[in-house]
Length: 351
Ligand code: PMP
Image (cartoon, rainbow, N blue to C red; front, side, top):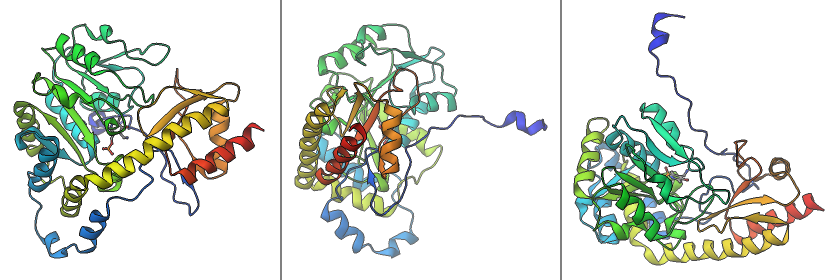
């Protein structure tokens, strides 16, 4: 081994879902929105003044912070914007999780949490969800250096009640509690409603799912001014200009077009509820997902075989060969037409 090899930071990276690009594929594997972004986003990008690219973007992402703060009715000082919520959550780990005590998160959850913990050398402890994949909040009443959970959780889609979330925050006043709300727009509760009561709460969100802008890479966090200032300081100690000009302008248009947002979100929720029934008819069982994906297992067929068969038909869903979930599939909600293609292929496989 060469001397310098010892000093390379060795990490196991996060494995994102495949991004194939086939003309007639049905892509239901990364929880993207099947509809285009707001027409206002289209308009602003078509008319984008490229002279703006000569200049650095505003380092504080001012216009977008302003639009997000107005939309969520919070002070601008309570908003942090980053390159997707992955960037925002990564920054939050770096900023807040510096205790010697382990941070806590569920064993079945977004598989980036342990990757960031390893990258930043943060000790962590995973807390098993129960056999129905539900989070037991009492398990979080142990000494810890911070807590993160997704609500609704991924890949299970299960939503925790607001009172359960509050109980976790209340019982852990000495720690920062991050609630990852990547999918909250498809659900019914939000921890944003608790912000006035708790200054140890950080809520993260994304434009990637409900606002159809995964390719623009916009995420944000809302928390107390103190938490957001701490995150800004870490960001400015690392990379000041994270957000590019087109993304900032497009993001403002997206958040301001609430009518369009509600229209596509409602369509996805309706398709999801219909999909629950159709998949049940085909012999699938699953959680009561409150997201834009379903987490299902089949009564007799193996998840891996279904996954491979669908892939051979250019229908992409997500499968993990991981303990506890290796007989499940996560199926993102597509358009009604895409979902029909899925049901047809499943009928063929199961015949
Ligand atoms: N949190 C959860 C639970 C997710 O599923 C995702 C999407 N992979 C993210 C955060 C990150 O999304 P983005 O970086 O696109 O905002």
